[in-house]
Length: 374
Ligand SMILES: *Cc1c(COP(=O)(O)O)cnc(C)c1O
Image (tube, rainbow, N blue to C red; front, top):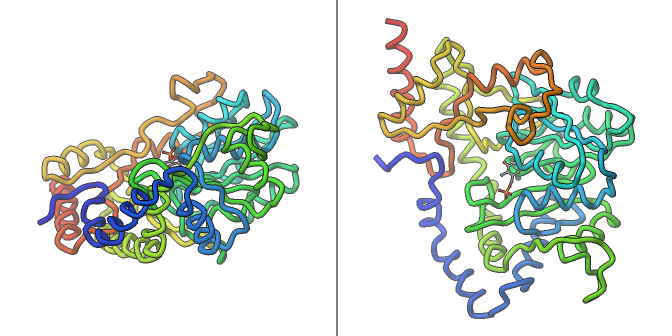
């Protein structure tokens, strides 16, 4: 059996090796390392795939979030609502810009931001909502856009984990004011280094963000905005151009592995398998179980002893991270996040899982739980 990994980029590369090698060699031969034609071509191809007017490539998914927020002209102390249960990048950029993060609970079944909690968190200072399309499915964008419209708020969709997912036929990241994504190697559409992109249908915002990614320049050496230097390298763009046509097949392969896991674990009484939210497809950036008998950490150790990696995404909610702990939150406002950090465990999930590997993972999880049933 091939060695089990959370993500198997090596095996994926072997299948597209010739195309990737040619793409890399092409960039080297052209010497167009920065802002070369590969970047523009990738931009156009991604616009077409997502059916969005503007894609702005940038350096990584964290920059994408920061640039999106910079474009909205928020004032220090303005409030941005986002999920407590997510990767720290989302909240980090809010604080970097002097804004105030307002963290809210997520839904226990879908891990997605709780729209009722959003409503309760709105104050006169609220300016934006950042729903995170966590683990590969899309937050309830109908409800979020409705709340945003009522209160005149911007919506930035953090699509780092859900590129290619649909919500009622629209691509994740193209439904709010702005969408952002990451091409970190292990994401569903990953390059071979850092990369990211911003999406919008708003011409004025797109223009502004194209300047911000490039030192606020719209005309060379004239700086109209305070910007950053955040570029997608030509080499990464060339690699992404090879991989984009495979994205749907990659997401399908993830879904197939998830279907196997769902079937395998559905009837184990101590396990809750992932629940699909309404109106969204799921691209399973992560396959995350909830272990309800308090033995999550023991399961993780057991699996690791058999050579099966497993990860806890995420062990600490953002409101309890040292960097962001304001002491202003009440535990009772986060019943779901509080449970999830104790229960979640993510199994290997990638495009190259084969039947033998899946079967071995299934048998191992079963072995662990039958041990407890006695
Ligand atoms: C990966 C990720 C990011 C950050 O992307 P980078 O390219 O690593 O900066 C932001 N938000 C979420 C939800 C992510 O999973």
